[in-house]
Image 1: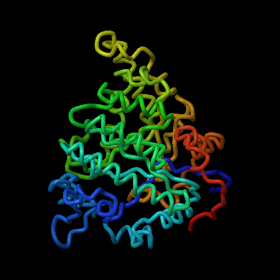
Image 2 (image 1 turned 120 degrees about the vertical axis):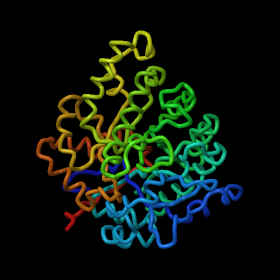
Image 3 (image 1 turned 60 degrees about the vertical axis):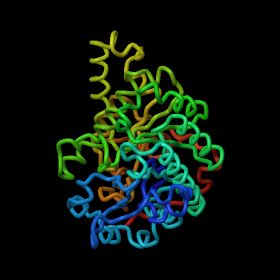
Length: 389
């Protein structure tokens, strides 16, 4: 809690431990996943290979992008301290976020490992199960303050549905996610994924998308840009835009009217103009191309969709004016290099064009509505945190 505001960090991260796959992946898969720096002496973020292929793009592995944004181990130590050497364990992450006043957070990961293009569906399902086992440990060791969204192995829809059911029934997972990128030439509006959306709606659990720059696979901007500045400017927002477009015009929300979907770490200021643009095109050609889209796109958004805002997105007021304040979630993006930590909540509260009522909704109430976690997963006590120095 900060300045009387409860804080629900809807999108946070960690650097997953190097032994995650060794400890939690079923033995029959372990020889297929490894952690290997490209060259001796290099310091790269999670350089994982799957069946001998790096899951990250060569641009992030061999370029100087991580150095440019201060995303090396030493730079992380300078900003985040002991939590880095402790391997971002649950207790350390909870304590680190408590400095911000965060009462509970939801982690999104892994960013690359199980999403490499062309991955064996059986292996992907095994990796999802391993991550979800690790997430259970994070929840327990953090005193319930660090929760996680469960990655869905979407390469095979039968395995995807089975993992949702198992993660829900056996591991207590109550939120699921996938990357917004095309996977095996399918976008998220493809009817192939309907069984996934059906079980999510049946269980009344949310679904989210989250992009991570640097995937060895289809990714907005990857076809033309080499620099972090160019690629990262594009990738999160544009992939979220295209995922939202695909799901709206292909009738996902028409077929699953109770499905809740959030497009994480893509900002919010673009949403009004994007919905208007979708509407213009549906009006023009939708009668033939997108007959499943029977309502105005803004109706689907207000009924089914959420987006996130980072602390210094000053144009958030425009989104609130156009669409209201009930579909925006707050994120610290901890511990990424562009996070405002330890001043993320403080920075958001300083926005003078956002009302106190809207701040309260964005910091807490909207995430409670989106996630709808059972009482057993929510904090029972709230402690005021002093302003970070």
